[in-house]
Image 1 (spheres, rainbow, N blue to C red):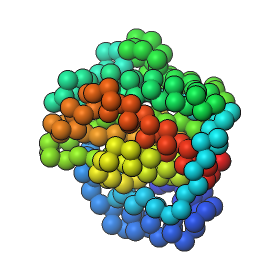
Image 2: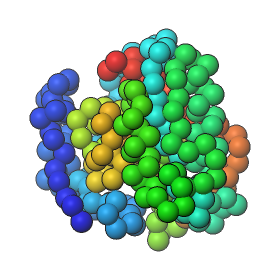
Image 3: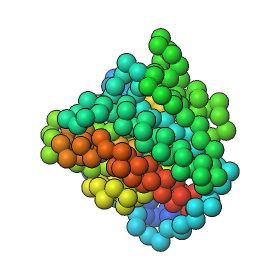
Image 4: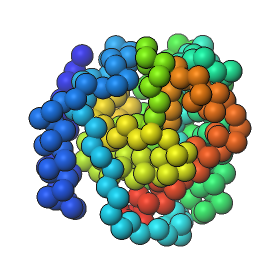
Length: 250
Ligand SMILES: [Zn+2]
């Protein structure tokens, strides 16, 4: 499994002191992930511990979304259901519903949306590498950012919360903004911003983040994630995160 360090020097462009301190602390303590090492081979890595989301004064300007191109990547699909938790729906259905809601919100705000899949199928076709297909869709688009949407799972069914992953550079700020937007909207427990060695984060050329909205292994969170109202709230959270991102980093 390939392991590499995030390129911290790229991250130093704003709030340098705070960012450096947080990343250093996170590397030094290397806290074990509460979600465990559940990633499929080739996708996962050992992440440093979570970075607390900054709560400084962030600008808020939905007009900052106008003309942006957002690549929305609902995880899994087709014969790959993703996480099957204790709730009524598999991960692939939940994240697709969230993605469609998000698409509508973003387009209403004047953004353009590119979906890596828009139905219950595996991107690229049955025999294709679906991760490569997602990356290809993103990299052949004029996408400004890439957001992959997932649900989490843990052996410990008591664990709940939202995590946002980045791999490098500007992706850190995107993950931070998304984490803030989602946690505020869902009122979920923040498990922080984490470094994640995911294929789709490593290989997309634009700032990229992967969000784990909540745990399908937890009864309460799984049943919430199975409802349309909560799915729409989750989309609203991602939307708000993108507004934070483009208002402050755009
Ligand atoms: Zn997933």
